[in-house]
Length: 209
Image (tube, rainbow, N blue to C red; front, side, top):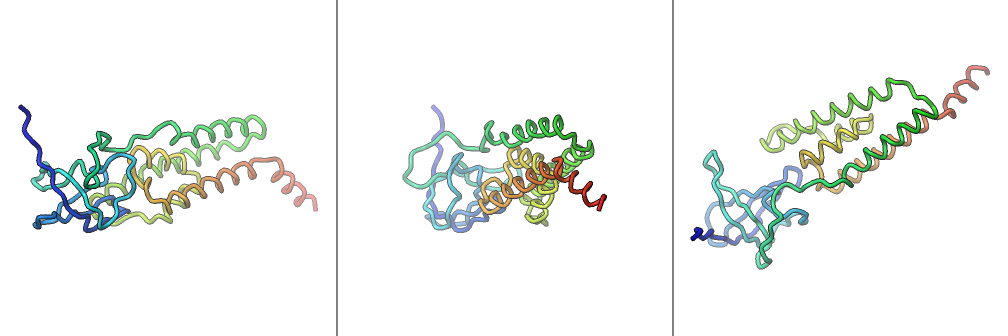
């Protein structure tokens, strides 16, 4: 017969949305329990301080304790815990941009260095997001959101999307996602406008005057 796993109840005492973790105050008193965002059900809303929670406790390899299988007290058990899985729609902007780039390349022939800029800045975005994710977990110095947004605006947004989904980083902060979406739109518009014959005609007109 399988051993019975005890569940506990407590109140979410604190939560850091940027770093994705907080602490639960046990109902029976005692030391607060660490809870990571991945201990909550997939697709659930951002944890709210003061919520009554039900959870199990496990010991980490380094001997510390943390909560697992956390849910709002009184709700039924769910099986969708762990890292939120990305679906195809998460990567749709990249696929659409590749199609757009091919069309622009065929019609207007932008310089080859433009593609190189997108590739280099995207790789740089993946690296920086990875560093920032590690820093968040370890409580170290973080990369500013403005720097992440500027790098995406400069052409690294395809790599940023990959990093956000694969690393599950910066995906739940709505203010950042809204600003990020805006930077993607601005970058794509700038790419189309600067690649179009309109800019070339303006340059030609100014040179003949």
